[in-house]
Length: 424
Ligand code: IMP
Image (cartoon, rainbow, N blue to C red):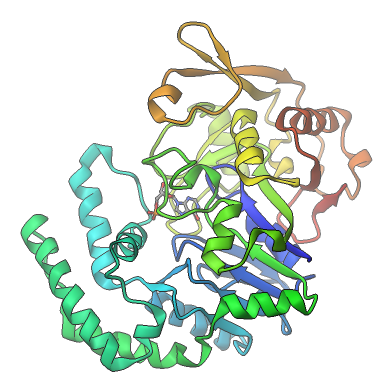
Protein backbone atom coordinates (compact mmCIF):
# COMPACT_ATOMS: atom_id res chain seq x y z
CA UNK A 1 0.00 0.00 0.00
CA UNK A 2 2.00 2.96 -1.14
CA UNK A 3 -0.32 4.92 -3.34
CA UNK A 4 -0.47 8.68 -3.01
CA UNK A 5 -2.72 11.31 -4.48
CA UNK A 6 -1.70 14.87 -5.34
CA UNK A 7 -4.61 17.34 -5.45
CA UNK A 8 -4.95 21.07 -5.91
CA UNK A 9 -6.44 22.79 -2.87
CA UNK A 10 -7.45 26.12 -4.40
CA UNK A 11 -8.70 26.95 -7.94
CA UNK A 12 -5.96 25.17 -9.84
CA UNK A 13 -2.51 26.21 -11.03
CA UNK A 14 -1.02 25.68 -7.58
CA UNK A 15 2.15 24.32 -9.16
CA UNK A 16 0.97 20.72 -8.87
CA UNK A 17 3.16 19.87 -11.89
CA UNK A 18 6.32 20.40 -9.88
CA UNK A 19 5.17 18.40 -6.83
CA UNK A 20 3.80 15.69 -9.12
CA UNK A 21 7.10 15.58 -10.94
CA UNK A 22 9.07 15.20 -7.69
CA UNK A 23 6.79 12.36 -6.53
CA UNK A 24 6.63 10.82 -10.03
CA UNK A 25 10.41 10.51 -9.99
CA UNK A 26 9.95 8.06 -7.08
CA UNK A 27 6.87 6.28 -8.49
CA UNK A 28 6.53 3.15 -10.60
CA UNK A 29 3.08 4.09 -11.84
CA UNK A 30 1.50 7.51 -12.48
CA UNK A 31 -2.24 7.80 -13.09
CA UNK A 32 -4.52 10.57 -14.36
CA UNK A 33 -8.12 9.92 -13.37
CA UNK A 34 -10.29 12.91 -14.31
CA UNK A 35 -10.50 16.07 -16.40
CA UNK A 36 -9.05 16.42 -19.86
CA UNK A 37 -6.91 18.80 -21.85
CA UNK A 38 -8.30 21.70 -19.82
CA UNK A 39 -5.38 20.91 -17.48
CA UNK A 40 -1.86 22.13 -18.12
CA UNK A 41 1.25 20.84 -16.42
CA UNK A 42 4.58 22.49 -17.08
CA UNK A 43 7.48 20.23 -16.25
CA UNK A 44 11.10 21.30 -16.44
CA UNK A 45 13.34 18.28 -16.93
CA UNK A 46 16.95 18.04 -18.06
CA UNK A 47 16.92 21.77 -18.86
CA UNK A 48 13.93 21.31 -21.19
CA UNK A 49 10.39 22.54 -20.65
CA UNK A 50 7.48 20.24 -21.45
CA UNK A 51 3.90 21.47 -21.48
CA UNK A 52 1.57 18.53 -20.99
CA UNK A 53 -2.21 18.57 -20.97
CA UNK A 54 -3.26 14.94 -21.06
CA UNK A 55 -0.30 12.59 -20.90
CA UNK A 56 0.87 12.11 -17.28
CA UNK A 57 4.17 13.83 -16.51
CA UNK A 58 5.68 10.48 -15.43
CA UNK A 59 6.17 9.85 -19.14
CA UNK A 60 9.50 11.68 -18.87
CA UNK A 61 10.82 8.81 -16.72
CA UNK A 62 11.83 5.81 -18.80
CA UNK A 63 10.52 3.11 -16.50
CA UNK A 64 7.37 4.76 -15.17
CA UNK A 65 4.05 3.34 -16.27
CA UNK A 66 1.70 6.20 -17.27
CA UNK A 67 -2.00 5.54 -17.14
CA UNK A 68 -5.10 7.43 -18.22
CA UNK A 69 -8.10 6.23 -16.25
CA UNK A 70 -11.76 5.79 -17.14
CA UNK A 71 -12.73 9.15 -15.60
CA UNK A 72 -10.68 11.22 -18.04
CA UNK A 73 -12.20 12.86 -21.13
CA UNK A 74 -9.69 12.64 -23.91
CA UNK A 75 -9.34 14.85 -26.96
CA UNK A 76 -7.60 12.49 -29.44
CA UNK A 77 -6.40 15.31 -31.67
CA UNK A 78 -4.58 17.01 -28.81
CA UNK A 79 -3.49 13.66 -27.47
CA UNK A 80 -1.86 12.63 -30.74
CA UNK A 81 -0.26 16.11 -30.93
CA UNK A 82 1.23 15.52 -27.48
CA UNK A 83 2.40 12.06 -28.53
CA UNK A 84 4.13 13.57 -31.59
CA UNK A 85 5.74 16.32 -29.50
CA UNK A 86 7.11 13.80 -26.99
CA UNK A 87 8.30 11.28 -29.59
CA UNK A 88 9.88 14.13 -31.56
CA UNK A 89 11.92 14.97 -28.46
CA UNK A 90 13.01 11.38 -27.97
CA UNK A 91 10.55 10.45 -25.18
CA UNK A 92 9.31 6.85 -25.43
CA UNK A 93 5.58 6.19 -25.15
CA UNK A 94 5.94 2.46 -24.56
CA UNK A 95 4.70 2.80 -20.99
CA UNK A 96 1.50 4.65 -21.83
CA UNK A 97 -1.95 3.04 -21.33
CA UNK A 98 -5.47 4.41 -21.78
CA UNK A 99 -8.57 2.87 -20.24
CA UNK A 100 -11.08 1.76 -22.93
CA UNK A 101 -13.82 3.38 -20.83
CA UNK A 102 -12.34 6.90 -21.07
CA UNK A 103 -14.67 9.22 -22.97
CA UNK A 104 -13.61 10.99 -26.14
CA UNK A 105 -13.97 14.74 -26.62
CA UNK A 106 -15.36 15.27 -30.10
CA UNK A 107 -15.35 18.46 -32.24
CA UNK A 108 -19.04 19.06 -31.48
CA UNK A 109 -18.21 19.19 -27.76
CA UNK A 110 -15.72 21.97 -28.42
CA UNK A 111 -18.21 23.78 -30.63
CA UNK A 112 -20.97 23.48 -28.02
CA UNK A 113 -18.65 24.64 -25.22
CA UNK A 114 -18.03 27.88 -27.14
CA UNK A 115 -21.67 28.34 -28.13
CA UNK A 116 -23.09 27.77 -24.65
CA UNK A 117 -20.54 30.16 -23.15
CA UNK A 118 -21.55 32.78 -25.73
CA UNK A 119 -25.22 32.14 -24.98
CA UNK A 120 -24.60 32.78 -21.27
CA UNK A 121 -23.23 36.23 -22.12
CA UNK A 122 -22.04 38.01 -19.00
CA UNK A 123 -22.93 34.99 -16.89
CA UNK A 124 -20.40 32.80 -18.73
CA UNK A 125 -18.29 30.37 -16.71
CA UNK A 126 -15.02 31.25 -18.40
CA UNK A 127 -14.32 27.67 -19.47
CA UNK A 128 -11.16 26.66 -21.28
CA UNK A 129 -13.39 25.96 -24.34
CA UNK A 130 -11.89 22.49 -24.71
CA UNK A 131 -15.32 20.82 -24.79
CA UNK A 132 -14.93 19.37 -21.30
CA UNK A 133 -18.45 20.13 -19.97
CA UNK A 134 -20.26 18.88 -23.12
CA UNK A 135 -18.14 15.68 -23.19
CA UNK A 136 -19.08 14.91 -19.57
CA UNK A 137 -22.72 15.78 -20.37
CA UNK A 138 -22.74 13.04 -23.02
CA UNK A 139 -21.07 10.62 -20.65
CA UNK A 140 -23.81 11.13 -18.07
CA UNK A 141 -26.52 11.18 -20.73
CA UNK A 142 -25.11 7.80 -21.79
CA UNK A 143 -24.52 8.73 -25.40
CA UNK A 144 -20.76 9.35 -25.24
CA UNK A 145 -18.06 7.83 -27.43
CA UNK A 146 -15.35 6.00 -25.52
CA UNK A 147 -11.73 5.08 -26.28
CA UNK A 148 -12.87 1.52 -27.08
CA UNK A 149 -15.26 2.87 -29.73
CA UNK A 150 -12.63 5.12 -31.24
CA UNK A 151 -10.27 2.23 -31.93
CA UNK A 152 -13.01 0.14 -33.56
CA UNK A 153 -13.74 2.02 -36.82
CA UNK A 154 -17.18 0.51 -37.49
CA UNK A 155 -18.49 1.07 -33.98
CA UNK A 156 -16.97 4.55 -34.01
CA UNK A 157 -18.50 5.55 -37.36
CA UNK A 158 -21.95 4.38 -36.28
CA UNK A 159 -21.86 6.15 -32.90
CA UNK A 160 -20.31 9.30 -34.35
CA UNK A 161 -23.04 9.47 -37.01
CA UNK A 162 -25.93 9.09 -34.59
CA UNK A 163 -24.63 11.36 -31.84
CA UNK A 164 -23.10 13.79 -34.37
CA UNK A 165 -26.45 14.28 -36.09
CA UNK A 166 -28.14 15.10 -32.82
CA UNK A 167 -25.34 17.49 -31.84
CA UNK A 168 -25.56 19.23 -35.21
CA UNK A 169 -29.26 19.80 -34.63
CA UNK A 170 -28.46 21.47 -31.29
CA UNK A 171 -25.61 23.48 -32.80
CA UNK A 172 -27.68 24.78 -35.72
CA UNK A 173 -31.27 24.89 -34.42
CA UNK A 174 -30.70 25.91 -30.79
CA UNK A 175 -27.60 28.07 -31.11
CA UNK A 176 -27.70 29.04 -34.81
CA UNK A 177 -24.13 27.78 -35.25
CA UNK A 178 -22.44 26.02 -38.18
CA UNK A 179 -22.80 22.22 -38.35
CA UNK A 180 -19.80 19.95 -37.94
CA UNK A 181 -18.85 17.90 -41.03
CA UNK A 182 -19.49 14.48 -39.50
CA UNK A 183 -17.98 12.38 -42.29
CA UNK A 184 -14.78 14.43 -42.25
CA UNK A 185 -14.62 14.02 -38.47
CA UNK A 186 -15.07 10.25 -38.79
CA UNK A 187 -12.22 10.07 -41.31
CA UNK A 188 -9.88 12.24 -39.21
CA UNK A 189 -10.68 10.61 -35.86
CA UNK A 190 -10.44 7.07 -37.22
CA UNK A 191 -6.78 7.88 -37.93
CA UNK A 192 -6.30 9.05 -34.33
CA UNK A 193 -7.93 5.81 -33.21
CA UNK A 194 -5.32 3.86 -35.16
CA UNK A 195 -2.54 5.82 -33.43
CA UNK A 196 -3.79 5.20 -29.91
CA UNK A 197 -5.10 1.62 -30.38
CA UNK A 198 -2.01 -0.12 -29.08
CA UNK A 199 -2.12 1.84 -25.82
CA UNK A 200 -5.71 0.96 -24.87
CA UNK A 201 -5.87 -1.40 -21.90
CA UNK A 202 -7.83 -1.88 -18.66
CA UNK A 203 -6.25 0.64 -16.29
CA UNK A 204 -8.31 -0.49 -13.29
CA UNK A 205 -6.76 -3.98 -13.58
CA UNK A 206 -3.24 -2.61 -14.18
CA UNK A 207 -3.37 -0.39 -11.06
CA UNK A 208 -4.84 -3.16 -8.92
CA UNK A 209 -2.11 -5.58 -9.95
CA UNK A 210 0.64 -2.98 -9.55
CA UNK A 211 -0.54 -2.36 -5.99
CA UNK A 212 -0.59 -6.08 -5.24
CA UNK A 213 3.00 -6.28 -6.50
CA UNK A 214 4.00 -3.54 -4.03
CA UNK A 215 4.65 -0.89 -6.69
CA UNK A 216 4.62 2.81 -5.78
CA UNK A 217 1.63 4.49 -7.38
CA UNK A 218 0.88 8.19 -7.73
CA UNK A 219 -2.40 9.69 -8.83
CA UNK A 220 -1.84 13.11 -10.35
CA UNK A 221 -4.75 15.45 -9.84
CA UNK A 222 -5.89 17.90 -12.47
CA UNK A 223 -7.83 21.12 -11.76
CA UNK A 224 -8.50 21.55 -8.03
CA UNK A 225 -10.85 21.34 -5.08
CA UNK A 226 -12.72 24.60 -5.67
CA UNK A 227 -13.33 23.50 -9.28
CA UNK A 228 -15.00 20.26 -8.12
CA UNK A 229 -18.48 19.90 -9.58
CA UNK A 230 -20.03 19.39 -6.10
CA UNK A 231 -17.60 20.86 -3.58
CA UNK A 232 -16.31 23.75 -5.64
CA UNK A 233 -17.77 27.17 -6.35
CA UNK A 234 -20.64 25.85 -8.50
CA UNK A 235 -21.46 26.76 -11.26
CA UNK A 236 -17.97 28.25 -11.76
CA UNK A 237 -16.39 24.83 -11.70
CA UNK A 238 -15.25 22.11 -14.06
CA UNK A 239 -17.41 19.08 -14.84
CA UNK A 240 -15.48 16.38 -12.99
CA UNK A 241 -14.34 15.48 -9.45
CA UNK A 242 -10.81 16.78 -8.86
CA UNK A 243 -11.18 15.75 -5.18
CA UNK A 244 -9.11 12.85 -3.82
CA UNK A 245 -12.22 10.64 -3.87
CA UNK A 246 -12.54 11.26 -7.62
CA UNK A 247 -9.37 9.21 -8.08
CA UNK A 248 -11.13 6.03 -6.95
CA UNK A 249 -14.10 6.26 -9.32
CA UNK A 250 -11.97 7.75 -12.08
CA UNK A 251 -9.55 4.82 -11.99
CA UNK A 252 -11.63 1.93 -10.71
CA UNK A 253 -9.87 1.28 -7.40
CA UNK A 254 -10.94 1.19 -3.75
CA UNK A 255 -10.11 3.95 -1.24
CA UNK A 256 -8.14 1.55 0.99
CA UNK A 257 -5.34 1.56 -1.60
CA UNK A 258 -4.45 5.17 -0.72
CA UNK A 259 -1.82 5.96 1.91
CA UNK A 260 -1.03 9.63 1.39
CA UNK A 261 -3.10 12.55 0.11
CA UNK A 262 -0.99 15.61 -0.60
CA UNK A 263 -2.71 18.92 -1.16
CA UNK A 264 -0.87 21.60 -3.12
CA UNK A 265 -1.50 25.29 -2.43
CA UNK A 266 0.24 28.47 -3.41
CA UNK A 267 1.50 30.81 -0.68
CA UNK A 268 -1.20 33.14 -2.06
CA UNK A 269 -4.33 32.48 -4.15
CA UNK A 270 -5.04 32.68 -7.89
CA UNK A 271 -7.92 31.79 -10.15
CA UNK A 272 -8.66 31.91 -13.86
CA UNK A 273 -12.14 32.15 -15.24
CA UNK A 274 -15.10 33.77 -13.56
CA UNK A 275 -16.64 33.36 -10.14
CA UNK A 276 -16.24 34.71 -6.62
CA UNK A 277 -12.81 35.19 -5.07
CA UNK A 278 -13.03 36.66 -1.54
CA UNK A 279 -9.35 37.62 -1.10
CA UNK A 280 -8.85 38.96 -4.64
CA UNK A 281 -6.45 41.91 -4.93
CA UNK A 282 -7.51 44.22 -7.72
CA UNK A 283 -4.66 46.62 -7.06
CA UNK A 284 -0.90 47.08 -7.41
CA UNK A 285 -0.08 44.28 -4.96
CA UNK A 286 -2.22 41.90 -7.06
CA UNK A 287 -0.37 43.01 -10.21
CA UNK A 288 2.97 42.54 -8.48
CA UNK A 289 2.09 38.98 -7.46
CA UNK A 290 0.86 38.25 -11.02
CA UNK A 291 4.02 39.53 -12.63
CA UNK A 292 6.48 38.13 -10.08
CA UNK A 293 4.75 34.76 -10.05
CA UNK A 294 4.25 34.58 -13.84
CA UNK A 295 0.55 34.06 -13.25
CA UNK A 296 -0.69 33.45 -16.78
CA UNK A 297 -2.56 30.27 -17.77
CA UNK A 298 -0.65 27.29 -19.27
CA UNK A 299 -3.67 26.20 -21.29
CA UNK A 300 -5.20 29.49 -22.38
CA UNK A 301 -2.53 32.12 -21.59
CA UNK A 302 -5.13 34.16 -19.68
CA UNK A 303 -3.83 36.44 -16.87
CA UNK A 304 -4.76 34.85 -13.55
CA UNK A 305 -6.65 36.78 -10.87
CA UNK A 306 -4.52 37.05 -7.71
CA UNK A 307 -5.18 37.45 -3.98
CA UNK A 308 -4.05 36.70 -0.41
CA UNK A 309 -3.86 33.20 0.99
CA UNK A 310 -7.32 32.12 2.07
CA UNK A 311 -7.14 29.64 4.96
CA UNK A 312 -10.93 29.14 4.86
CA UNK A 313 -10.52 27.62 1.40
CA UNK A 314 -7.55 25.44 2.24
CA UNK A 315 -9.26 24.21 5.45
CA UNK A 316 -12.21 23.21 3.26
CA UNK A 317 -9.74 21.31 1.06
CA UNK A 318 -8.12 19.61 4.03
CA UNK A 319 -11.56 18.31 5.03
CA UNK A 320 -13.12 17.31 1.70
CA UNK A 321 -9.95 15.62 0.46
CA UNK A 322 -8.84 14.13 3.79
CA UNK A 323 -5.38 15.64 3.24
CA UNK A 324 -2.47 14.08 5.07
CA UNK A 325 0.05 16.75 4.02
CA UNK A 326 0.24 20.15 2.39
CA UNK A 327 2.80 21.47 -0.08
CA UNK A 328 3.01 25.29 -0.20
CA UNK A 329 4.40 26.57 -3.48
CA UNK A 330 5.81 29.83 -4.72
CA UNK A 331 6.74 31.27 -1.33
CA UNK A 332 9.56 33.13 -3.15
CA UNK A 333 6.95 35.16 -5.09
CA UNK A 334 5.97 36.95 -1.87
CA UNK A 335 9.47 38.31 -1.28
CA UNK A 336 9.56 42.10 -1.56
CA UNK A 337 5.84 42.70 -1.88
CA UNK A 338 5.49 44.28 1.58
CA UNK A 339 3.43 43.10 4.55
CA UNK A 340 1.36 39.99 4.04
CA UNK A 341 -2.19 39.06 4.95
CA UNK A 342 -3.84 35.70 5.58
CA UNK A 343 -7.60 35.32 5.51
CA UNK A 344 -8.51 33.35 8.63
CA UNK A 345 -12.33 33.48 8.51
CA UNK A 346 -15.24 35.22 6.75
CA UNK A 347 -17.51 37.85 8.24
CA UNK A 348 -21.13 37.86 7.09
CA UNK A 349 -23.11 41.08 6.64
CA UNK A 350 -24.90 40.51 9.98
CA UNK A 351 -21.50 40.44 11.70
CA UNK A 352 -21.34 36.67 12.27
CA UNK A 353 -17.89 35.21 11.73
CA UNK A 354 -17.71 31.83 9.97
CA UNK A 355 -14.74 29.48 9.65
CA UNK A 356 -16.13 26.93 7.18
CA UNK A 357 -16.32 27.62 3.47
CA UNK A 358 -19.98 28.30 2.58
CA UNK A 359 -21.63 25.55 0.48
CA UNK A 360 -23.29 27.90 -2.03
CA UNK A 361 -22.29 31.08 -3.87
CA UNK A 362 -25.24 33.06 -2.53
CA UNK A 363 -23.80 32.63 0.99
CA UNK A 364 -20.25 33.28 -0.17
CA UNK A 365 -21.38 36.54 -1.76
CA UNK A 366 -22.43 37.66 1.71
CA UNK A 367 -18.90 37.12 3.10
CA UNK A 368 -15.96 39.45 3.65
CA UNK A 369 -12.50 38.11 4.49
CA UNK A 370 -11.17 38.54 8.05
CA UNK A 371 -7.42 39.14 7.82
CA UNK A 372 -4.41 38.61 10.03
CA UNK A 373 -1.41 40.80 9.18
CA UNK A 374 2.13 39.46 8.82
CA UNK A 375 5.47 41.10 8.52
CA UNK A 376 6.73 40.57 4.95
CA UNK A 377 10.26 39.67 3.84
CA UNK A 378 12.65 41.02 1.25
CA UNK A 379 15.36 38.35 1.22
CA UNK A 380 15.94 36.13 -1.80
CA UNK A 381 14.86 32.75 -0.45
CA UNK A 382 15.34 30.81 -3.68
CA UNK A 383 18.54 29.11 -2.51
CA UNK A 384 17.30 28.04 0.94
CA UNK A 385 17.52 24.29 1.44
CA UNK A 386 16.10 23.98 4.96
CA UNK A 387 13.19 25.57 6.81
CA UNK A 388 15.55 27.10 9.36
CA UNK A 389 17.36 29.00 6.58
CA UNK A 390 14.21 30.95 5.75
CA UNK A 391 13.86 34.46 7.26
CA UNK A 392 12.10 34.39 10.63
CA UNK A 393 9.04 36.26 9.29
CA UNK A 394 8.76 33.70 6.53
CA UNK A 395 8.92 30.83 9.00
CA UNK A 396 6.20 32.46 11.11
CA UNK A 397 4.01 32.85 8.00
CA UNK A 398 4.33 29.12 7.16
CA UNK A 399 3.77 28.03 10.77
CA UNK A 400 0.63 30.12 10.97
CA UNK A 401 -0.65 28.67 7.67
CA UNK A 402 -0.10 25.21 9.09
CA UNK A 403 -2.01 26.08 12.27
CA UNK A 404 -4.91 27.72 10.42
CA UNK A 405 -5.26 24.95 7.82
CA UNK A 406 -4.96 22.16 10.36
CA UNK A 407 -2.54 20.15 8.24
CA UNK A 408 1.19 19.50 8.27
CA UNK A 409 3.10 21.54 5.67
CA UNK A 410 5.57 18.95 4.42
CA UNK A 411 6.97 20.77 1.40
CA UNK A 412 7.68 24.41 0.57
CA UNK A 413 8.42 25.50 -2.99
CA UNK A 414 10.91 28.38 -3.24
CA UNK A 415 11.55 28.54 -6.99
CA UNK A 416 10.48 26.97 -10.30
CA UNK A 417 13.17 24.29 -10.49
CA UNK A 418 12.48 20.76 -9.30
CA UNK A 419 15.32 21.12 -6.78
CA UNK A 420 13.86 24.27 -5.23
CA UNK A 421 11.82 22.52 -2.61
CA UNK A 422 12.23 22.50 1.16
CA UNK A 423 11.06 19.20 2.63
CA UNK A 424 10.08 19.24 6.31
P1 IMP B 1 -13.67 23.80 -18.10
O1 IMP B 1 -13.01 22.78 -17.25
O2 IMP B 1 -12.94 24.10 -19.38
O3 IMP B 1 -15.12 23.49 -18.33
O4 IMP B 1 -13.68 25.21 -17.30
C1 IMP B 1 -14.42 25.39 -16.11
C2 IMP B 1 -13.65 26.26 -15.12
O5 IMP B 1 -12.53 25.53 -14.63
C3 IMP B 1 -13.08 27.54 -15.70
O6 IMP B 1 -13.10 28.55 -14.70
C4 IMP B 1 -11.65 27.18 -16.03
O7 IMP B 1 -10.80 28.31 -16.06
C5 IMP B 1 -11.32 26.26 -14.86
N1 IMP B 1 -10.27 25.29 -15.13
C6 IMP B 1 -10.38 24.15 -15.84
N2 IMP B 1 -9.21 23.48 -15.83
C7 IMP B 1 -8.35 24.21 -15.10
C8 IMP B 1 -6.99 24.00 -14.68
O8 IMP B 1 -6.34 22.99 -14.99
N3 IMP B 1 -6.45 25.00 -13.92
C9 IMP B 1 -7.16 26.10 -13.52
N4 IMP B 1 -8.42 26.31 -13.87
C10 IMP B 1 -9.02 25.36 -14.65
